[in-house]
Amino acid sequence: MTGQEATSGHQRQAASEHPSRADSYYALLGLHPSASAIEIRRAYRKLSKHYHPDTTQLAKTIATAKFQQLNEAYATLSNPERRQAYDLKIRYSRYNVIQPSHPLERSQASASKRGSSSAYLDPTDRPLSDGELFAVLMMALSLMGCLILAIAIGLARSEFSLEPIEPPGILINTFVSRL
Image 1 (tube, rainbow, N blue to C red):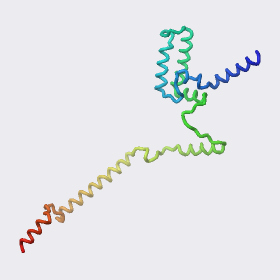
Image 2: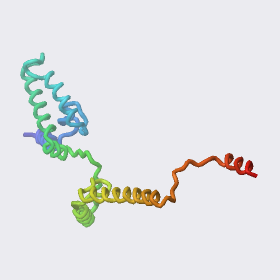
Image 3: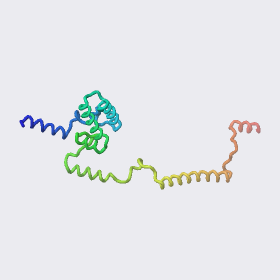
Image 4: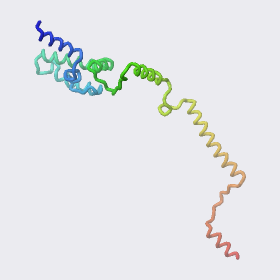
């Protein structure tokens, strides 16, 4: 084995360990790594119809090889765990992650992450509990009861009159006519 053959063999091995985006499963399906599961399925179905050995006009060996590659790509990308592992392998992240520069910051970041993962939600993000709903209902009923009681007491004391009010001009005319 010559030096060139050894070097090219090493390059092929490195390429298989970390596939570039050009020869990745995503490129095989004609998709970007941020594609959704639905887009992956659509692309797979379209290409599998084209490359299926029974329906294609390509040579049987080429069609079979291409169809097997498509199946492997779809099997990996349709499974969320396998897709995540594959994305790590090709060094693609769906999320913008800021990595701490040294271990001290990393341990502090992980400690703060553990502390924030409590069972309690932000009050604006959670629904009201049964007890809270009952308390709101009781407050609303108390307010309505107070209003009804105030109106009833006012009517019972006769301080509140339901007689129609006459416009001021009519009162002046009756007052002037009496003089």
